[in-house]
Length: 113
Length: 118
Image (cartoon, rainbow over all chains, first blue to last red; front, side):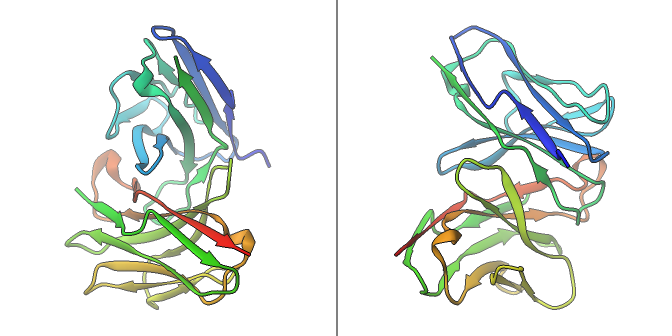
């Protein structure tokens, strides 16, 4: 089973460039999330979605955008990359409910220079 | 809003020693609690969870966590650690009473890096 797949694994961007981090899951999960992980800061929620066509902001949404046109895919868009967006990004998905397990992708390590 | 505090950012221990990773949460209502583990260069994976019932929950690899409602804590323990337990551990909380699109959302602590030395 593929689970949650993120691409790319690594990327270096120049300030002002844009890019899309891809996330796809094959478990038919309704809920999907994007987190960023910075050293000593834990995981901060950027955006999340509870189903196709429904997205909502998390704790740190500024500088990012998302869309959810299908159940499987939840891409994260950076429009104007800034050094503050240097981080490791994780996509996760889970079945509907508060008790269900979240499954994470392997992460995308992004450096903005 | 809920918050989760992991009291130790790094915990170094020797192999076969016991370890406790501390987690406190702030919530006036009942919540669901989770521990996730992140091995180097990997994503997070569920270690164990508390939903209801017995306050002591166990994982398949020897970790256990105890839910203490009066202390609002969910500390993770292992009586004897192995080198392979070296990882970052995250405590997380989910509020079953959250409404709307917040239902099911996880809030994570800052993480504790466990390093097991030979």
